[in-house]
Every structure is written in structure tokens, then in C-alpha cells.
Length: 188
Image (tube, rainbow, N blue to C red; front, side, top):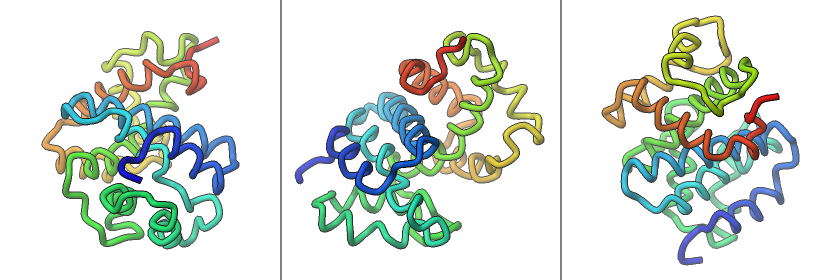
């Protein structure tokens, strides 16, 4: 495989991931990665594909996340740079693969960030469709809101990217808005 396409990523992911919430998370991260690619002037479909595939082994091996990723994806022909990017999103948690490229740093950052954006959008009658950054930032500052999302990790990712949380969140929100229906965030 020369390049991982979104279609191929969805096909591969579907062999391992069946849970609705994990498929929705894959879609959220994919949408965010597309927007990050636009920000960095990179290949949006490629980044979206890596985002879609990032939790490939999580459903079957939640306690050994990313330990069952490298070999299976390699055998399926997924390019090494994409496997490395996927492994890097677990940096300091379950892998020692440090995010170095813009794609890797972006994936590391948006993985958790999309969780807070999604939760904030779900609180609104209109979903993410007209959600503004200031509305998100209020939720961000409330440590009890979406408490399961690791804010320290997100800030570490932002630092790697040389971005403030406001900038990263703004990019992610716009990326997710573009896929509001698919992400079940179009409101009532």
C-alpha cells in the first residue's frame, strides 16, 4: 500500500472495532485530523485515515492498547510512518514512541480533545453546528466537565504543536462541524 486511504482505514478498522462508541470516536478523531491537516497544509485524507485507524486494537485489548497494532497493520500493508503515528498517540501512557511529526503531534492532541468537544456539543440543542470557541472554553475551564478527558495530556500536545488550547480547539471544532451529521452532533 503506497498510501493509507480513508476507505482502506475504515475497512481495516471494521475488522477489529464493532462498538458504536469506538466507531464514533474514530469518526471524531478522523474529522479533527482532517482539519489539522488543512492547518498544516498536509494531505487531509491521509491524516483523516490515520485518525480513523488510531484505536485499531483498543476494543479487543483495552488493557494492552497499542501492543497489538504494529504487526497486524504491517501485515495489512499499512505504511510504517502511519503505524508510527498511531503508536505515538499513546506516548507516555502505553508506548514510548514520541510524537515528532506534525501528524503525530496532532493525533496525540486531538485524541482526547475531541472527547471534550463532543461532550460540549452534546449539551447544546443545536449541537456543534453553531458552537463557538468561547462556549467550548467555558466547558474546558470546568474541570468537572468531561472529567474523563485528560486535560494535561491535551495541553502537553498543544505545547508540542506550539499552539494554545484555544487555537487547537478552534481547529478541531471547525473540523468536527464539517461532519456534524456523521458525528451525531447536528442537534435536535
